[in-house]
Image 1: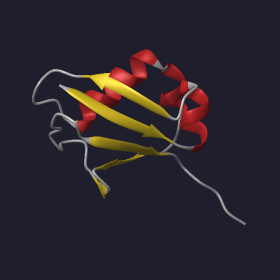
Image 2 (image 1 turned 90 degrees about the horizontal axis):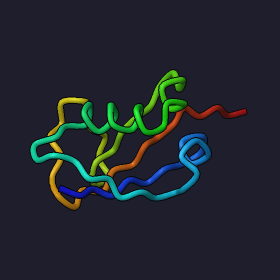
Image 3 (image 1 turned 120 degrees about the vertical axis):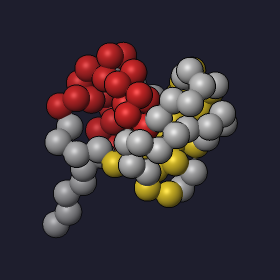
Image 4 (image 1 turned 135 degrees about the horizontal axis):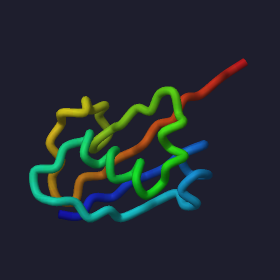
Length: 80
């Protein structure tokens, strides 16, 4: 299956792009997607927190992904 990944902030800087298409095996979950990203982009592991949204809703690591899902990686933010 193929999913679309949108990247923001530091995740965009680490990956070098604001969007990616990722191929995953069927019945993959968010944790498996993150594992693949950590292999491809090891600097992502250094982020203390990383939220994941699937189709505009926050998703837990156990969430099963479907073909054509739109996934956003939401990095930690600071404000002032």
